[in-house]
Image: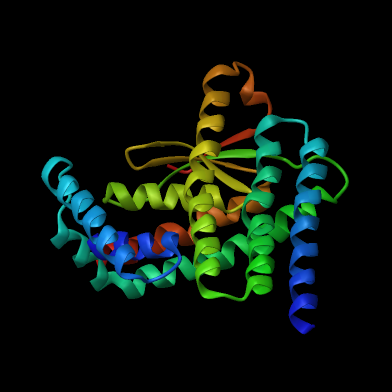
Amino acid sequence: MFVVLMILWLIFAGSVTVTNLILGAIVSGLITLLCTRYMGYSTKRFYRGFSKADEIAFYLAFLLKEIVRENFDVLRFVYRKGQPKPMLVHFHSNIRTEALRVLVANSITLTPGTFTVRLEGDEFAVHALDEYFQIDIEHSEFAKLAKKVEEA
Amino acid sequence: MIRVILAGLFLAFGVFMFFSEIVGFYKFTYVMNRMHAAAMGDTLGIGSILIAVGILTGELVPILKLVLILVFMFLTGPVVTHLIAGAEVETHKNAGHEYREVDRR
């Protein structure tokens, strides 16, 4: 986390000078220390995530692709005559990790045409703009990819 | 010159996405459907406009800041959408008439 915060600091500062480096190191170190001591943050767990970098990168690339594709799908519904037929789909994802469930729910919400209304335990309730998007939910690629990240 | 034209194309596309968002917003009649239209501007609209601005500046640090803007947009957008949707489902008693419910559990 220290490295990430340091990079963030340098991006905001806009230039790599001695003052920026020293100030950044102090602030990043302080935040990392506070998080480790009082918020149950563990550096080891953070760096263990890097072993899954391949899967996570693949997931993010797929997410970007889906955002672009579904944008054009919703665009079609905007300029087509008549109202769409919305639906609310309940389904299970079989993902065990809490963080990955939230990631999947947020990915579904981020792609236009579908968004998560409720997430209780492993149960998703997803609203789709039209029956057309239902296919995406039922064979949710996000859930499959997140499962891969979990197992990696 | 090519850079300006490329940036202009991305900018025009982003503005078109925002225009479509407004059209969709007024075309759809129910709040949940309107949110789908609003999601278009939040993702591809702002994305292509930021790409255009990035091409125009052409420097590393401003581009990294633009990427950060996009990341924060992508992190906060779904949370708000989720809250509005939750409020609608909880408070609207006849919400069931507006959509078909399908159970795949």
